[in-house]
Image (cartoon, each protein chain N blue to C red):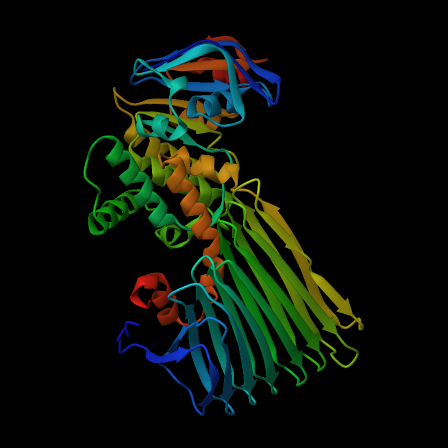
Length: 237
Length: 290
């Protein structure tokens, strides 16, 4: 599904990723661990097409398409979802309107008809009910004044509605209590199948106890220093 | 001019000339929409008098059929505990010039909300003098300056707090494209007798081109210590992080920008207390009136 080869990425002329390579197949769950500054967030931001990340060498192919030739919205509509470590607050943009706009953008990209407001609301409410999530988030502005936990729940809601094929979680467990982490795991596990893949960044084993990774990678100084199975994360923790 | 009939509103059609008096005696639940057809080389005066405890929402739309240079004077007299929500919506041809002078007499515990929505013309000059001479008077001025081409807008707002526990908040949001220019010049003076006053001034601008220009000079002159006051000014382009967030969820760049700009101006529209007037502005089309 995702093939990264010999990737070099700089941010403001500082080389962060250095000769980074990674292959993720459909249905696999990969965990990325490592110290702060090792390049974990830079990697997922580069996959999503963040404006700060300048790819100087190497390639990223996703579903056999050259990702570096696609704009960030095209990457999203191809099925890549980045859950932000610190989701941006956008006051004045209603959360429900944003979700519907994002879903319709994806449908338009695939040549499908726009979803009507009623169907959208039904779909949304059923997802919220399924995981006992609070629907008051929908009435508020996008992440504006949300607590850390609410922001992460909102990212989960987007994952459920948009149904991406490759989910990138950038420290979704940071700042969450154990119950909230269980909800994250419940939602993500419910979505995983042999077609959907996950790359999650975390510092802690507790998320990995709930979402079992196929592979664990340790990132050090911009490249993978060590790879293994779930037991590798236990050694680190 | 096409007269649009909608029973949710009262309509008044004016030519921008002569003197018009509006005497409001009680609470009006229906907003008043004034369609003001601006005529070249003419000056109009509108005097609004709100009796004690009267309340009204007024939207005045300045439109014209062809290029004009004209002037308007707006005098707002509010008796005790009266409430006036006045909204000026300016949608003139892009070669027109309009000056508007606002003045007010605000009695005890009255509330005056003045919204200026500047969407078009070649040049627009608003001058506003509000003397807060009676206690517990509240004044809010909210300005949206959304310009393109070579349009210029100036807002000179003088607020003088002379009585205790008075309140003023002056805000200007600017969205500028092309070679447009916006000048925000508020001066709020808090005199010795105006104890426990609150006075605020804010300016926020989004610049969408290199050639556009905004000048904001928030200015407070304070002669007492017992008050709350603040002023601030920010200028920037569309927030790149917000833009990326929306794009990374699949929304095209142009639409994402539009969403961010609409969110920016929404704060001003949201401050219009009448939902009916908000709806009228949302559905307003210049073509219906010229």
